[in-house]
Image (cartoon, rainbow, N blue to C red; front, side, top):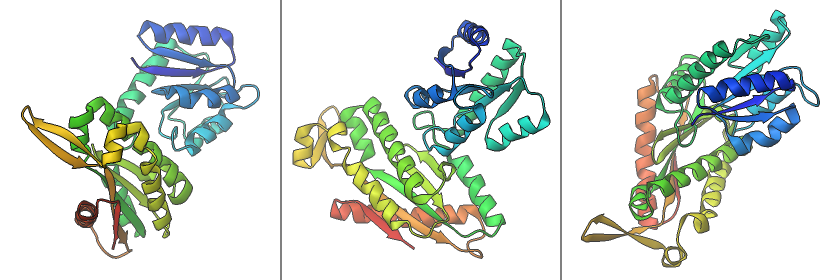
Length: 306
Protein backbone atom coordinates (compact mmCIF):
# COMPACT_ATOMS: atom_id res chain seq x y z
CA UNK A 1 0.00 0.00 0.00
CA UNK A 2 1.37 3.41 -0.99
CA UNK A 3 1.92 5.98 1.76
CA UNK A 4 1.01 9.67 1.53
CA UNK A 5 2.05 12.22 4.15
CA UNK A 6 -0.27 15.25 4.26
CA UNK A 7 1.15 18.35 5.96
CA UNK A 8 -1.64 20.92 6.26
CA UNK A 9 -2.90 23.11 9.14
CA UNK A 10 -6.47 23.48 7.80
CA UNK A 11 -8.48 20.65 9.37
CA UNK A 12 -11.21 20.64 6.71
CA UNK A 13 -8.68 20.38 3.89
CA UNK A 14 -6.82 17.67 5.81
CA UNK A 15 -9.99 15.62 6.18
CA UNK A 16 -10.89 16.06 2.51
CA UNK A 17 -7.49 14.93 1.31
CA UNK A 18 -7.36 12.06 3.79
CA UNK A 19 -10.76 10.76 2.64
CA UNK A 20 -9.80 11.14 -1.05
CA UNK A 21 -6.53 9.23 -0.74
CA UNK A 22 -8.07 6.51 1.41
CA UNK A 23 -10.69 5.96 -1.29
CA UNK A 24 -7.88 4.91 -3.66
CA UNK A 25 -6.18 2.68 -1.06
CA UNK A 26 -3.44 4.95 0.25
CA UNK A 27 -2.11 4.70 3.78
CA UNK A 28 -2.51 8.28 5.03
CA UNK A 29 -0.30 10.03 7.58
CA UNK A 30 -0.86 13.57 8.81
CA UNK A 31 0.90 16.54 10.35
CA UNK A 32 -0.55 19.95 11.14
CA UNK A 33 2.56 22.13 11.03
CA UNK A 34 6.06 22.08 9.58
CA UNK A 35 7.84 21.22 12.81
CA UNK A 36 5.63 18.19 13.38
CA UNK A 37 6.20 17.11 9.78
CA UNK A 38 9.97 17.01 10.15
CA UNK A 39 9.65 15.04 13.40
CA UNK A 40 7.50 12.37 11.70
CA UNK A 41 8.75 12.10 8.13
CA UNK A 42 11.69 9.74 8.75
CA UNK A 43 9.53 7.39 10.78
CA UNK A 44 6.98 7.25 7.95
CA UNK A 45 9.23 7.43 4.85
CA UNK A 46 6.21 8.12 2.62
CA UNK A 47 5.97 7.60 -1.12
CA UNK A 48 4.83 11.21 -1.54
CA UNK A 49 4.38 14.35 0.59
CA UNK A 50 1.55 16.86 0.18
CA UNK A 51 2.92 20.05 1.74
CA UNK A 52 1.08 23.29 2.50
CA UNK A 53 3.06 26.54 2.30
CA UNK A 54 1.39 28.73 4.92
CA UNK A 55 1.62 26.96 8.29
CA UNK A 56 2.44 27.91 11.88
CA UNK A 57 5.88 27.37 13.45
CA UNK A 58 7.57 26.53 10.13
CA UNK A 59 6.27 27.25 6.64
CA UNK A 60 6.36 24.84 3.70
CA UNK A 61 9.35 26.51 2.08
CA UNK A 62 11.40 25.93 5.24
CA UNK A 63 10.19 22.33 5.46
CA UNK A 64 11.16 21.47 1.89
CA UNK A 65 14.60 23.00 2.41
CA UNK A 66 15.10 20.57 5.31
CA UNK A 67 13.71 17.64 3.29
CA UNK A 68 15.96 18.30 0.28
CA UNK A 69 19.00 18.81 2.50
CA UNK A 70 18.56 15.50 4.34
CA UNK A 71 20.04 12.40 2.61
CA UNK A 72 17.16 10.23 3.89
CA UNK A 73 14.36 12.40 2.49
CA UNK A 74 15.87 14.36 -0.38
CA UNK A 75 14.36 12.18 -3.14
CA UNK A 76 10.78 11.87 -1.84
CA UNK A 77 8.34 13.56 -4.28
CA UNK A 78 6.67 16.69 -2.89
CA UNK A 79 3.52 18.48 -4.06
CA UNK A 80 3.25 21.96 -2.54
CA UNK A 81 -0.15 23.56 -1.92
CA UNK A 82 -0.90 27.21 -1.31
CA UNK A 83 -3.64 29.81 -1.57
CA UNK A 84 -1.02 32.15 -2.99
CA UNK A 85 -1.21 32.14 -6.77
CA UNK A 86 1.66 34.53 -7.38
CA UNK A 87 4.34 33.39 -9.80
CA UNK A 88 7.12 34.18 -7.35
CA UNK A 89 5.70 31.71 -4.81
CA UNK A 90 5.52 28.96 -7.44
CA UNK A 91 9.08 29.69 -8.52
CA UNK A 92 10.27 29.59 -4.91
CA UNK A 93 8.66 26.19 -4.38
CA UNK A 94 10.12 24.73 -7.58
CA UNK A 95 13.53 26.24 -6.87
CA UNK A 96 13.59 24.64 -3.42
CA UNK A 97 12.80 21.23 -4.90
CA UNK A 98 9.01 20.84 -5.13
CA UNK A 99 7.98 18.42 -7.88
CA UNK A 100 4.54 19.99 -8.33
CA UNK A 101 2.94 23.24 -7.12
CA UNK A 102 -0.86 23.54 -6.93
CA UNK A 103 -2.98 26.53 -5.95
CA UNK A 104 -5.98 26.11 -3.62
CA UNK A 105 -8.83 25.26 -3.81
CA UNK A 106 -7.62 21.79 -4.79
CA UNK A 107 -9.60 19.34 -6.87
CA UNK A 108 -8.99 16.00 -5.05
CA UNK A 109 -8.98 13.89 -8.22
CA UNK A 110 -6.42 16.18 -9.87
CA UNK A 111 -4.24 15.99 -6.76
CA UNK A 112 -4.41 12.18 -6.73
CA UNK A 113 -3.68 12.03 -10.47
CA UNK A 114 -0.58 14.19 -10.04
CA UNK A 115 0.52 12.18 -7.00
CA UNK A 116 0.17 8.90 -8.91
CA UNK A 117 2.25 10.23 -11.80
CA UNK A 118 5.01 11.45 -9.47
CA UNK A 119 5.15 8.15 -7.58
CA UNK A 120 5.31 6.21 -10.86
CA UNK A 121 8.12 8.43 -12.12
CA UNK A 122 9.87 8.15 -8.75
CA UNK A 123 9.92 4.35 -8.76
CA UNK A 124 10.98 4.18 -12.40
CA UNK A 125 14.23 5.85 -11.38
CA UNK A 126 14.61 4.71 -7.78
CA UNK A 127 15.40 1.31 -6.26
CA UNK A 128 12.33 0.13 -4.34
CA UNK A 129 14.37 -1.30 -1.45
CA UNK A 130 16.90 1.49 -0.82
CA UNK A 131 15.10 4.43 -2.49
CA UNK A 132 18.33 5.36 -4.27
CA UNK A 133 18.71 6.38 -7.91
CA UNK A 134 19.69 3.63 -10.35
CA UNK A 135 21.96 2.97 -13.35
CA UNK A 136 20.13 5.18 -15.86
CA UNK A 137 20.41 8.17 -13.55
CA UNK A 138 24.11 7.44 -12.99
CA UNK A 139 24.81 7.24 -16.73
CA UNK A 140 22.99 10.52 -17.37
CA UNK A 141 24.84 12.24 -14.55
CA UNK A 142 28.24 11.07 -15.81
CA UNK A 143 27.31 12.30 -19.32
CA UNK A 144 26.44 15.70 -17.89
CA UNK A 145 29.73 15.94 -15.99
CA UNK A 146 31.77 14.93 -19.05
CA UNK A 147 29.95 17.35 -21.34
CA UNK A 148 30.65 20.19 -18.92
CA UNK A 149 34.33 19.17 -18.57
CA UNK A 150 33.94 18.65 -14.83
CA UNK A 151 36.51 16.80 -12.76
CA UNK A 152 34.97 14.22 -10.44
CA UNK A 153 35.63 11.04 -8.49
CA UNK A 154 33.53 7.91 -8.99
CA UNK A 155 33.48 5.30 -6.23
CA UNK A 156 32.05 1.86 -6.97
CA UNK A 157 31.29 -0.29 -3.91
CA UNK A 158 30.48 -3.98 -3.70
CA UNK A 159 29.17 -5.96 -0.72
CA UNK A 160 31.22 -9.14 -1.07
CA UNK A 161 29.57 -12.49 -0.21
CA UNK A 162 26.11 -10.90 -0.36
CA UNK A 163 24.66 -13.69 -2.51
CA UNK A 164 25.72 -16.46 -0.08
CA UNK A 165 24.28 -14.30 2.72
CA UNK A 166 20.90 -14.32 0.96
CA UNK A 167 21.04 -18.11 0.69
CA UNK A 168 21.92 -18.46 4.38
CA UNK A 169 19.64 -15.85 5.95
CA UNK A 170 16.96 -15.30 3.31
CA UNK A 171 16.21 -12.50 0.87
CA UNK A 172 14.12 -10.53 3.37
CA UNK A 173 17.14 -10.33 5.66
CA UNK A 174 19.24 -9.45 2.62
CA UNK A 175 16.95 -6.49 1.92
CA UNK A 176 17.51 -5.33 5.50
CA UNK A 177 21.26 -5.36 4.87
CA UNK A 178 20.76 -3.24 1.74
CA UNK A 179 18.65 -0.76 3.70
CA UNK A 180 21.25 -0.59 6.46
CA UNK A 181 24.03 -0.10 3.92
CA UNK A 182 22.16 2.60 2.00
CA UNK A 183 21.67 4.45 5.29
CA UNK A 184 25.41 4.15 5.98
CA UNK A 185 26.19 5.57 2.55
CA UNK A 186 23.75 8.44 2.98
CA UNK A 187 25.34 9.34 6.29
CA UNK A 188 28.90 9.12 5.00
CA UNK A 189 28.14 11.01 1.79
CA UNK A 190 26.38 13.75 3.75
CA UNK A 191 29.26 14.07 6.21
CA UNK A 192 32.27 13.62 3.94
CA UNK A 193 31.26 13.63 0.30
CA UNK A 194 28.48 15.70 -1.19
CA UNK A 195 24.75 15.85 -1.81
CA UNK A 196 22.58 12.77 -1.88
CA UNK A 197 21.90 12.96 -5.63
CA UNK A 198 25.48 11.72 -6.07
CA UNK A 199 24.58 8.35 -4.53
CA UNK A 200 23.28 5.42 -6.62
CA UNK A 201 22.19 1.77 -6.23
CA UNK A 202 23.15 -0.13 -9.39
CA UNK A 203 22.58 -3.82 -8.61
CA UNK A 204 21.67 -5.87 -5.55
CA UNK A 205 25.17 -5.65 -4.07
CA UNK A 206 26.66 -2.70 -5.99
CA UNK A 207 26.46 0.97 -5.12
CA UNK A 208 28.09 4.10 -6.49
CA UNK A 209 29.10 7.49 -5.16
CA UNK A 210 30.12 10.44 -7.29
CA UNK A 211 31.79 13.37 -5.60
CA UNK A 212 33.86 16.36 -6.64
CA UNK A 213 35.65 16.45 -3.31
CA UNK A 214 39.21 15.18 -3.44
CA UNK A 215 39.47 13.79 0.10
CA UNK A 216 37.56 10.52 -0.05
CA UNK A 217 39.77 8.18 1.99
CA UNK A 218 38.13 9.25 5.28
CA UNK A 219 34.64 8.81 3.84
CA UNK A 220 35.36 5.26 2.64
CA UNK A 221 37.01 4.28 5.91
CA UNK A 222 33.92 5.60 7.71
CA UNK A 223 31.74 3.38 5.50
CA UNK A 224 33.89 0.37 6.41
CA UNK A 225 33.67 1.16 10.12
CA UNK A 226 29.90 1.69 10.13
CA UNK A 227 29.38 -1.56 8.22
CA UNK A 228 31.44 -3.47 10.81
CA UNK A 229 29.16 -2.07 13.49
CA UNK A 230 26.21 -3.84 11.85
CA UNK A 231 27.48 -7.32 12.74
CA UNK A 232 25.19 -8.00 15.69
CA UNK A 233 22.15 -6.90 13.66
CA UNK A 234 22.79 -9.02 10.58
CA UNK A 235 24.53 -12.21 11.80
CA UNK A 236 23.91 -14.91 14.38
CA UNK A 237 26.36 -14.79 17.30
CA UNK A 238 27.89 -18.12 16.31
CA UNK A 239 28.68 -16.83 12.82
CA UNK A 240 30.33 -13.73 14.25
CA UNK A 241 32.55 -15.87 16.50
CA UNK A 242 33.43 -18.24 13.67
CA UNK A 243 33.99 -15.35 11.22
CA UNK A 244 32.12 -17.36 8.58
CA UNK A 245 28.68 -18.79 7.90
CA UNK A 246 27.43 -21.88 6.11
CA UNK A 247 24.84 -21.90 3.34
CA UNK A 248 23.24 -24.47 1.07
CA UNK A 249 23.85 -24.19 -2.66
CA UNK A 250 21.68 -27.22 -3.30
CA UNK A 251 19.83 -29.56 -0.99
CA UNK A 252 22.85 -31.74 -0.27
CA UNK A 253 25.65 -29.23 -0.86
CA UNK A 254 26.69 -27.08 2.10
CA UNK A 255 29.41 -24.43 1.67
CA UNK A 256 31.23 -21.95 3.88
CA UNK A 257 31.39 -18.23 3.22
CA UNK A 258 33.42 -15.49 4.92
CA UNK A 259 31.44 -12.65 6.45
CA UNK A 260 30.48 -9.84 4.13
CA UNK A 261 33.04 -7.10 3.48
CA UNK A 262 33.08 -3.94 1.39
CA UNK A 263 35.31 -3.55 -1.67
CA UNK A 264 35.70 -0.06 -3.12
CA UNK A 265 37.13 0.91 -6.50
CA UNK A 266 37.91 4.59 -6.99
CA UNK A 267 38.56 6.40 -10.28
CA UNK A 268 39.56 10.06 -10.51
CA UNK A 269 38.21 11.53 -13.74
CA UNK A 270 39.95 14.59 -15.22
CA UNK A 271 38.64 17.21 -17.65
CA UNK A 272 40.03 15.55 -20.77
CA UNK A 273 39.90 11.81 -20.24
CA UNK A 274 37.90 9.63 -20.52
CA UNK A 275 35.43 11.12 -23.02
CA UNK A 276 32.55 8.60 -22.79
CA UNK A 277 30.42 7.54 -19.83
CA UNK A 278 30.76 3.84 -20.78
CA UNK A 279 34.54 4.13 -20.56
CA UNK A 280 34.25 5.65 -17.09
CA UNK A 281 32.06 2.77 -15.93
CA UNK A 282 34.27 0.15 -17.56
CA UNK A 283 37.42 1.51 -15.93
CA UNK A 284 35.93 1.83 -12.45
CA UNK A 285 34.51 -1.72 -12.69
CA UNK A 286 38.00 -3.01 -13.46
CA UNK A 287 39.34 -1.16 -10.43
CA UNK A 288 36.54 -2.62 -8.29
CA UNK A 289 37.41 -6.13 -9.49
CA UNK A 290 40.96 -5.56 -8.22
CA UNK A 291 39.60 -4.39 -4.87
CA UNK A 292 37.31 -7.43 -4.65
CA UNK A 293 40.25 -9.75 -5.28
CA UNK A 294 42.24 -8.02 -2.53
CA UNK A 295 39.27 -8.38 -0.17
CA UNK A 296 38.95 -12.08 -1.02
CA UNK A 297 42.64 -12.69 -0.32
CA UNK A 298 42.79 -10.69 2.91
CA UNK A 299 39.30 -11.33 4.28
CA UNK A 300 39.03 -7.61 5.03
CA UNK A 301 37.57 -4.50 3.49
CA UNK A 302 39.63 -3.16 0.60
CA UNK A 303 40.01 -0.01 -1.43
CA UNK A 304 41.88 0.57 -4.70
CA UNK A 305 42.33 4.13 -5.99
CA UNK A 306 43.47 5.14 -9.48
